[in-house]
Length: 263
Image 1 (tube, rainbow, N blue to C red):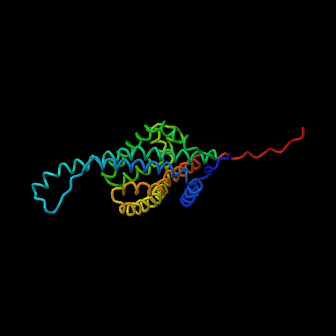
Image 2 (image 1 turned 30 degrees about the vertical axis):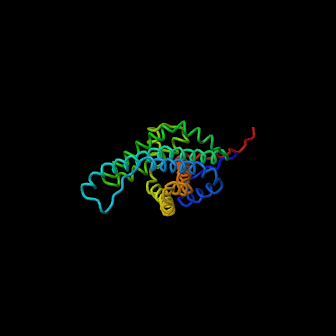
Image 3 (image 1 turned 45 degrees about the vertical axis):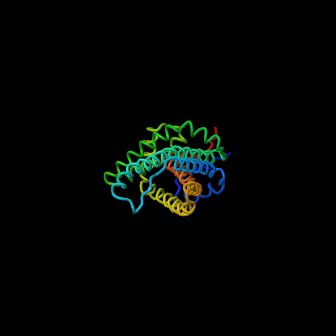
């Protein structure tokens, strides 16, 4: 099938429009990995909450009672947060990798398969997790230092996942590759990331409000609802990757034909 990947640099509006067009065209396929991820994380969190009992506090407690219960409370909360974050981190990158691979195959081949995307993502999972740790540390240090360096690093490394999944690179190589792709497009990259983050942030906030109505199952409900908007980021970043590839690829100009000469 003919390639549908961008042949030129796209504007932010075109990327957003095409992101939603791709999502709506294959809504179920894009949603399934994130629904599965949300369900797994939600069930995992519910299970942990049932097993790890978090001590409660009351206004009638004495200071000694409060101090005696505080270590157990902190230990339970930290353990819950850590175990939930680990599973959500791994499962989230699996879903994101599948979405990037699915989008790439759709753009390049006109057809895609979730099983193929899952298998390839599992083969690249260590690279995805490694680059996540590296970029996370660098961005955190940058934010703590002066904030602006952290934002610049986040922009610089915004295409590491598409680079790993599409170019089959390693974690370290994807860092320099992403930096080269977004060079001279810092503000544009920041604006695109801001728009995508705002869309997902507003949706996640609304999902959280709805989930809070379901008590113990609130986390599970929130994760499921949030899954509906999560494909937007990997689809958008994949389109932006191809847009930057088109920008940095030299255009081949057709050579003018020489007029035939009589021998």
